Amino acid sequence: MIHKIALVLVIIGALNWGSIGIFGFDLVAAIFGGQAHIGSRIVYTLVGIAGLWCITLLFRRLDAND
Image (cartoon, rainbow, N blue to C red; front, side, top):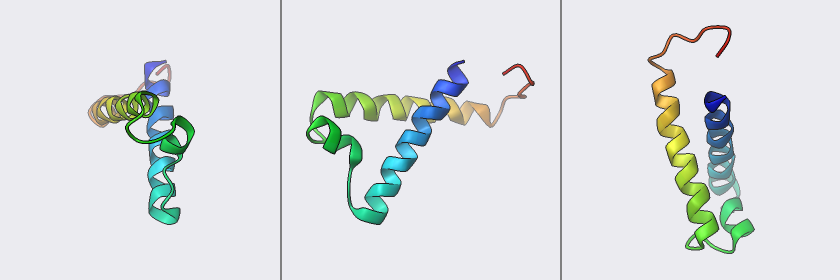
């Protein structure tokens, strides 16, 4: 289950970075009222932690049950 949560958060982060790169628009900051807002910082932190977690997936043998 944690793998799926981490993957969803990484996808959210990737979509946000894509919108920044293509449109110059930070969706997370727009939703929470700026990059410095505590809500934005929490989302950015969770996405970062999820990214670190997903690095570990590169070195794991995944079974059908994961």
